Length: 321
Image (cartoon, rainbow, N blue to C red; front, side):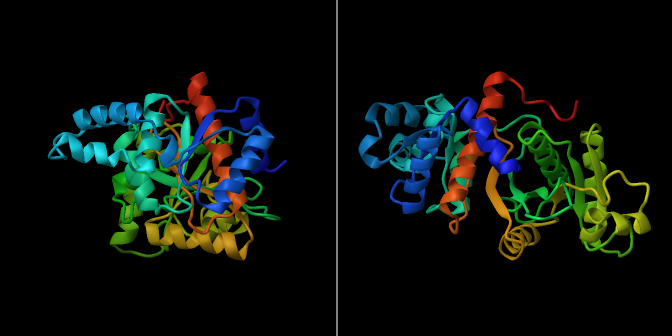
């Protein structure tokens, strides 16, 4: 059974309430029917007609107290709660739902902004990033063709500290949600000093920070992609590494590299790409590519359900301990 099918089966064991605020999108409509029919989630279909005035007032009052230094008056915030995306995020914050999935029509920046402003940030990381779950058919690399790519959606040019935190968040997702042991490679155009430059220095520093912060995770860098993936190349370049040739979590040095690579992998290798899954928040949510398929929406919903299940059972582990 593939990892994505396994996620759907896990979701069915204890379906959670997932909000869909893009009901006008035909792909989302079709996905909701599949989710409901297969018992993957309990879909909460949000439209302007069923947004409750009492909840809007409740959300606006809370949000205004939370961010009153940003807004001139309460009415600005009350108007914000007319936005289905913010309303959906606040439903999750208040426990009226267990997660939300959006992005078929909204941009990633809009989804991320609503999530960051409405949901709670995990203290362990203090940083919101994203990852893609990639499942590549007939592939022997990674975890039998399964990879986590990060960050492909949120932080354009991460610092060394941010790269290290992205690595930790992605590793936690691999361990908690996919139940695989993460082997994290911080990628570069250099392998262990084969080239020089400030971009390489950033990845090298990030590797050291990540190892210090997350000592129980296998992390290595800077690595070129072939050294990270191919065991024969790894044997020649760095045979003592526990990650080289076996990496299943790939950390890209910037958003250009991450986003381009995930889309190339998806299209050229006919990979399944689930995400962007938003990481670093206490409550689960997933973005969607605006080029998503119906199956992509279903897969994101299943992933969000499994993350919510782990929160309900208290199985999320602190990855630095």
